[in-house]
Length: 273
Image (cartoon, rainbow, N blue to C red; front, top):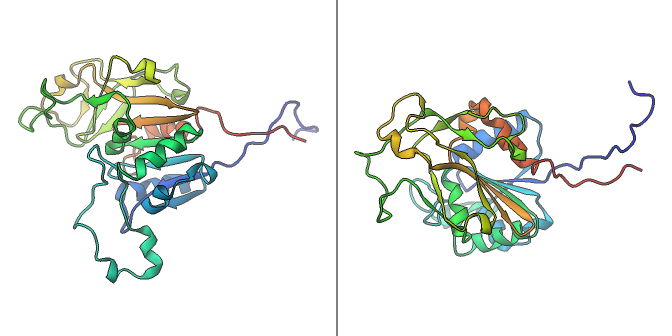
């Protein structure tokens, strides 16, 4: 044990993590809870009504949106339609609603501009385009129509990406990690991406990224962006297209998520007294 406190030591403030979910539960959010609890991160479950109310930076440092909580169309994916609110007990009605482009995205953009961080996974990377960033669907033809399943289809397979290991959130990662891919979104960054603070973190740099599983049209992935980072105001939006936490089994890409929570090692701190 040390006999004296090291010089220059600083206390690390606990992260205020908000895990976004919806009434009835989102399965990827549930798996993410397991990971956060396993690594002993405290978190608060956040529902759409709280997001829409704004003032998020006063309560949270980072918000986590798992696959299915938002899509480019502006709504989280669910099953069975909206519940009959008259049948929902009053204490659970605060959990109702959806993350929308109309109400939620402006509040989220304000949160990031004020220094907040958002970690978006899977379909939730659509938040980037919804916030006005120059991001489009890479897996589409010249007219912007998504490729049909007969031309491109990659369900539940393991692919290889090229990772920019100079990025702070890539600390501890190999330059060519394997990622879980389940018809995951792939990004195309606009020519003005750099000037808008958007940069690629991981790309598909070969025509044969398949490591395990099966794929139709895998060559269409070449040069697509799998992961990206966007600096918006004082904060950051991280977008992970692949399932970097897939059912708490994708241990090889946990570091990206955990580093992003930590803001690339920019956690708020103060000098020790």
